[in-house]
Every structure is written in structure tokens, then in C-alpha cells.
Length: 231
Image 1 (spheres, helix red, strand yellow):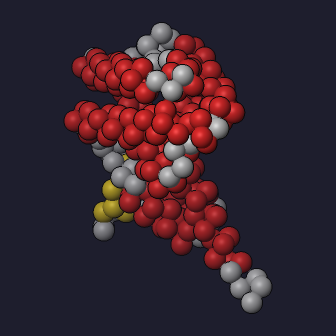
Image 2 (tube, rainbow, N blue to C red; image 1 turned 90 degrees about the vertical axis):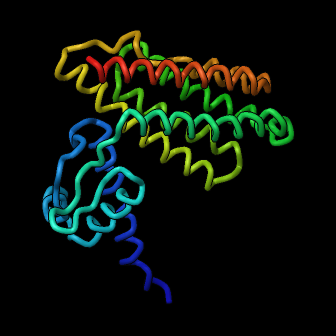
């Protein structure tokens, strides 16, 4: 019957909004690794009932961003440098598959217009990286890779890569925020900014060049996080 799914749809939308908001809080460093909170605290913070909050927190736990504690509620997951290395390796494997597919089938699918849109996201990400604006960079970087992976035509793989990139940013942002907020460091010139070069390689249907750029990206990112962690 029309309208019978209304409350369920509203609750689902609210759950996703809360999950997105909490994810952004983690990415912004306002919810730090190891920080604990309860369903009641989050419900009161957002002025909503406990049910969608609990569902959102369980969802984020399944994504590996939170840990559930039966007695204390939830806490932000603490990632290690080994976790970060594994994430970079997994990201590279998925990206290579996407690059090869786009090189082989790009002309047939006519993805040139879509790559032009992705390139614009890359330009914004590169500008934010050069300016050291971490918040803007994370937003555009996630959109860049989400739109790029969507060209692969497999929504499950695209969603997997997006979640993996969110987790890797969560892992990295801990050290990047501490460097800027606590140490007073400047991120200008330190963040990777070769997004448009990657798109240009894909426009040329050159997966080897795209692979080399991502290898450099991962090496750069890992070196930076290791250096900041040591500092």
C-alpha cells in the first residue's frame, strides 16, 4: 500500500545522515582515535531518537571506523601504520584493475566526458593540496576517486574502494591534524597533488603510466605519515 514504507525510509535516510556526519567528524579530527561515546550522547547531540543513531553506529562499526564495546558503547577505531600500509596496497590493487579496464574499454564506453568531469575534481583536489587545506582536499579527493571508480561499471567495487579510501584518510588524518593543530606545522607542499596527471594518463589509455603515478602516490603518502608519526 502507498505510504506504508514512509517511516522506514525516513529512518534509513536519517541513519545515513548521522553516519555521514560522524564520519566527517572523524575525518576532521573532532572525534579522535580511542575516543568513546554512547548512543545516548550522540542522540542528544543531534536531537534524534536512539534507534537511527544505533543503526548508524553499527554501520560505521561494520566499515571499520568504530569499535563496539558491550558495556561502554562505541569508540573511534585506532589504526596502526601497518594498517595504513595494507590499505595502500589494497587501494593500488583495486586501482590497477580499474585502470586496465578503462584502457581496454574506455573508447567503447565513451568515458571521455566523464573523465573531463573527474579531471575537474582533480584540479580542485590539487589546488587544496598545494594550499595545505586538508579538509577541502579530503572532500575533493574522495569525490575524485568515487567518480573515477564509477567508470569501471561495478558499483560493488566502487563502493569498496570508496570505503577503503575513507579508512585510509581516517588513518592518515590523525597524524596530519596533529602536525597542524598541535605542532603548528604547515601542510603546504607536503600533500600529493598529481590528480590531473593521473586522469591525463587514463585519457591516453596508458594504464602503465597511471600505475606508476599511483605507486608514487602511495610511496609519498606512506613516507609522509611515517615521518609525521615519528615526529
